[in-house]
Image 1 (cartoon, one colour):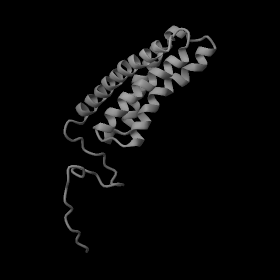
Image 2: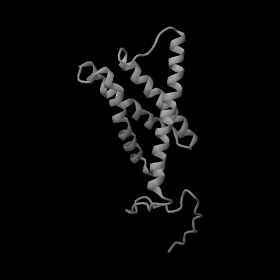
Image 3: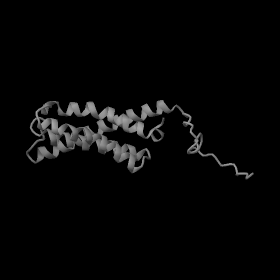
Image 4: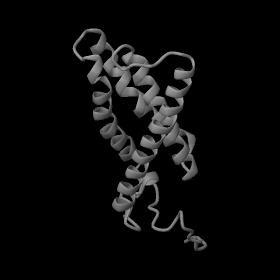
Length: 156
């Protein structure tokens, strides 16, 4: 019989379940509450990014004598909004210590609805004026599902 030295438990290994043990990790430190708080923080970061970078974009375009209209240029407006939201969210995620893989995955959740809606827009199934609203309607649950994919990282 081999005796193993007792492993020192750190904040990251406490409550860890050995790989292949067949057991689910035990939820620690209010995991669902932390998950929900993190989701809301990311939504706030997205809104801040959208408002701040959107204002900068509109200001620069106004100085150039043009504008980005969602009714005339729905694809560009949708991509610009997804970019602005992604920048705000990526900044917050990196500040909180998330890796690039999960950060880029979450940014992909900002662009995926727009890219999926573009063909519907081109086929006149979706109107230009409803494009951004539909994009948000799909984006928020998609973000939630991306977070569920990495439960351990986001707090569950």
